[in-house]
Image 1 (tube, rainbow, N blue to C red):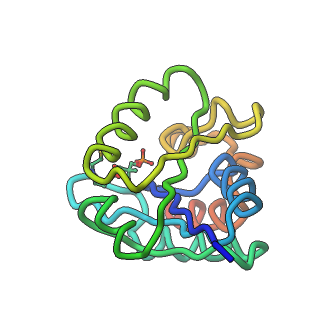
Image 2 (cartoon, rainbow, N blue to C red):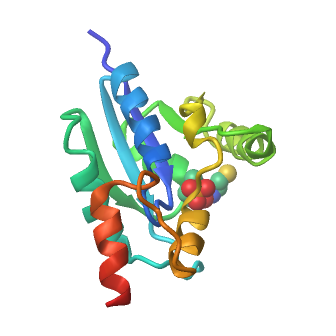
Length: 160
Ligand code: PNS
């Protein structure tokens, strides 16, 4: 029987409840889902890749068919190495569409065998992003309900 492996790539700095909403939907739709954290040397992240993977590991524990990995280089090369034919991405609002379309079509040009599948998170999370979570937290705002408890704890530990 054919089993579908999908890759959900991103920065996840840090993982939000919006990401988890998408992971839950992806875990239902695909046989296996790899959440792939990009090791990006250009960006200046709040959390190290190891910290991000640890938080994702904890937050995705409810779904046995979800794994968390680190990748670097081209996403399509990584997907090919892992034998995945699907890239999963979330679209929150129209504003996400242009960037996502550009990436999906470029990835298709690079590797026509891999299909990008878009899913929408619950509308409650349509305005949620890792960038805003970090900004709200830095400025003393409450991020409860926006991120999983493990991220809240790690954020608090950063300012101690
Ligand atoms: O959550 P993000 O930061 O929007 O995720 C972006 C990500 C990691 C999916 C994208 O930057 C990516 O795939 N980077 C790997 C390098 C690559 O393949 N670039 C060409 C994309 S067309």
